[in-house]
Structures are given as structure tokens and as C-alpha cells.
Image (cartoon, rainbow, N blue to C red; front, side, top):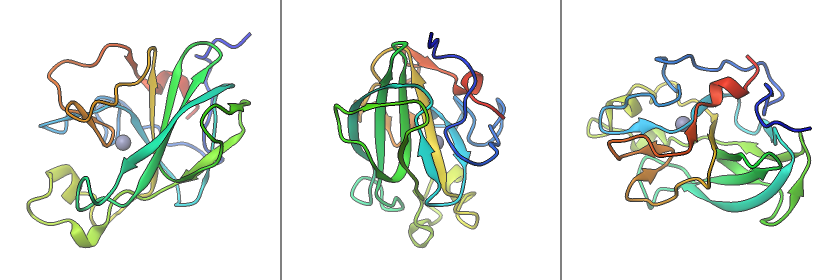
Length: 179
Ligand SMILES: [Zn+2]
């Protein structure tokens, strides 16, 4: 029986899962915001796999230059797993299954994308963004929720949380991922 919390890997490459306190870790303190997921670095175009069987309940635009000028356009896809856990796979270049599709464990659901456009990063950009300018990493931004993920852009944007308290239901993906 699926429990939703056995350790799995959404990418076909060895994962470096940022430990608590490292850049890209869960609930990283970015001064005016906190990071809602965990960043899993991989080359742009790397396939992304569902880590639990379930249904695609949402597909949307995660980042775009019309939201923030230093962002490229990327997509997110939310799967409600059979266990009831919600998985948000973010910052992907493209997604594969349509909303309402049932996916099996380890079906490919998209490809790793690249959020940052280095040409548009400058001294007014947030510090943690300036620090990424030269590196410009591609990554899967991965969130896990025990209830439907918050998508209200007043509090949540691009994988970051702008409220003072952690949103209810947001889980640390560290405990779900293979190193
Ligand atoms: Zn992220």
C-alpha cells in the first residue's frame, strides 16, 4: 500500500538534497520570504518523474517575466497522490500529462527548467538571486503538502512564502527523498 512517505527520487540523476540551512533547502530564510520547497539541481531538460501514483489536479505557470523581470517562463504541476498527499513539481520547462490525467509512480511528467534570466539580474534583485547569477542553476523546485497547495499570489509566489507564519499543511520534502 502506498504510504506517500517512503523515500523516492523524482529525477534520474543522483540527488543532492539541500540539508536544512543550505541554499535551496526547505523553509530557507530569504529575508523577506521563505522557500516553500526544496531545490533539486539537474541539467535543463532532465526528465521529472512522479514519485507517487495519483491524479494531476493542476497545471499552471510558475514563473514568467511578466511576474518578475529576471524570471523565465516555467510551469508547475500538482499531483494528488493516492495517499492524499499533494506534490507540486515546479520550475519545469514543460509538462506532459494534462489536468485530470492519472499518472503512475515514475511516469515522466515534465522536464527540469531554468528560472533565472541572468541578463535581467541586477543590484536591485534580492541578494539570494544575485548570488545565483553566475551559476544560473537549472532545478526542479519540489513541494509537498498535506492539503491543497496555497496558490494565492499575495502570500505565495515562485515557490516562496511571504507570510509571517508557515502555511498549514506544508511539509519538508527532505523526508521523502533519496539522497
Ligand atoms: Zn525553489
